[in-house]
Amino acid sequence: MKLLQLNAWGGRLDKSLSKFFTEEKFDIVCLQEIIDFEGQEGSFVSLRRCQAASKLEHLYFSPMFTQRYMKRKASFGNAIISRFPITKSKTVFTHGRYQDDYDIVEHGDNIRNLQHIQIKIEDQLLHVLNHHAYVVHGDKNGNDVTDAQMQLIARYLDNLQGPIILVGDFNLSPLTRSLSFINSRLNNLSIKYKLTTTSTIFSDIPVVRDYIFTNDHVKIRYFGTLDYIVSDHKALILEFEL
Image (cartoon, rainbow, N blue to C red):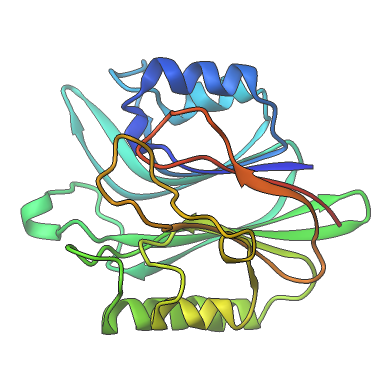
């Protein structure tokens, strides 16, 4: 099975992103910073167009906020697209709460949530969790807020049993105190496979901040980044078995 982790950057690189999903084949796609448009497509590649190009049937979208886009609405958030049916799903807000009429001055730029789905693959249940983390502007070292956010996710993980894959743009360097709460519970593949950056030429933050974590119930066949430039973040790929 093949899983994609990608911060989609709002679909800014629309032609590259569309081609990417047409050419690459995945079983599970996890996206952050993806936009779901109301009605006809907008200027950027939307969630529905990504899903159509991926040819994956099952979708779980967790918007963080919705705002007006000309005469329609655009919702911004995290999404998981799956070849396998989703048997359970849940969204947990880790900072702030959903805003239906979003204004950055009033609500800030750090509304964040954690997605959790359960899918059945043959006779096993797999937990897939997708997160876009709080941004500490200026560095990726974290602070008391990110500590609290990662502790919340760690407590959530403690209640799960069986195979677990946690992915996302965590906006934290690998060995920060905040990320240690996750590193102590799951295998951090970005550390294990010695990634040096998860940024592309469109980013001025040359550090690792995107991750795939697994527990020991997940057998790793391949982990790495793709050469496609479809965002300011690199695409992370996990090939695995249960």
